[in-house]
Amino acid sequence: MKFKTLTQYLVEQQRQNHALQAEVRLLIEVVGRACKSIGHAVGKGSLGGVLGSLESENVQGEVQKKLDVMSNEILLEANEWGGQLAAMASEEMETIHKIPNRYPKGEYLLLFDPLDGSSNIDVNVSIGTIFSILKAPAESSGREITEQDFLQPGTQQVAAGYAVYGPQTMLVITLGNGVVGFTLDRETGTWMLTNENIQIPADTKEFAINMSNMRHWAAPVRQYIEDCLAGTTGPLGKDYNMRWVASMVADVHRILSRGGIFMYPWDSREPGKPGKLRLMYEANPMSFIVEQAGGMATDSVNRIMDIQPTELHQRVGVVLGSKNEVERVRAYCAGS
Ligand code: P6P
Image (cartoon, rainbow, N blue to C red; front, top):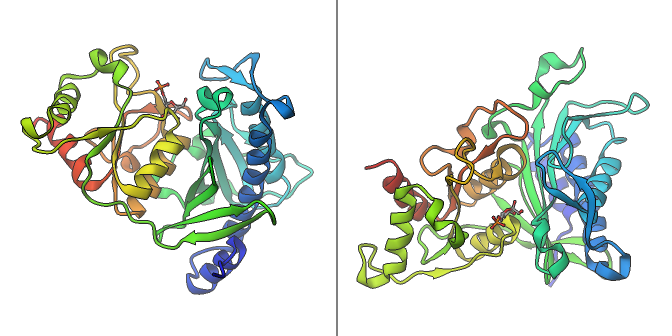
């Protein structure tokens, strides 16, 4: 069977969908190449001396893994010279990364979590890269880009995607007209289009949540999970299965592949924070992908992509996946 390459897919999208700008097409190809390099480094593991942690902490106060920093550098170096971007932002960097003056500047903003699921790096469990593309505000063209220019709701995303470094290395993207998946041909180093129209089933019997936090959840979330655990003996009338990889990319990829609901809700361990996951470069890109695949993404009640950001690294509660199940959780949490 002959598969289209990422380049062929993007060229055809640009031809069919004139809204796809050449700069965005090039940007996605560059990010795709960077993800191949990251996947290669991840795959080396101990052989490449890339496992383990550094002494440093990132802006989130988390100990940085060697591969976190390497992946961040790979994405910065790959994307800063091409002329498509005005600036970049990353989970691993406190402030935005402006394009050096020696390179031309473009009108797009790239945000990424360079290596999501870091706690799994050293134990050989799937991890991934998440990215989101925004357009710089038109009035920013004559001035320095600021962090404020990044603070756009998820509905403003031009494109989003993730790479998952698992048994297969895959790249899943949306340009705003559906979701497609590419599998890396490791012999030729080419992204091959293997999933042409990814759709999330509206219903599911599988939930993904870190159960060890149960005592910290808000009462409606606890009640929902207790009702799932009650199975056919409870009000939901069906037996549920549970998965928790602790790599958002891996859990979301499973949901895109067979349905399910992913939850990282607010919990009382850090009552002042709405959740653990970050809005701009985890929740928003994943929400764009999930919605484009027919799913739904909320903070348990409100649509994530409608949230007006106030800080670059702000966190958010996340409930996403099969539409009817996310709607069910919203009913529990909205008190209706
Ligand atoms: P916990 C990884 O660190 C991450 O940001 C997501 O990828 C993942 O879903 C979540 O945190 C796992 O969190 O508390 O279960 O380790």
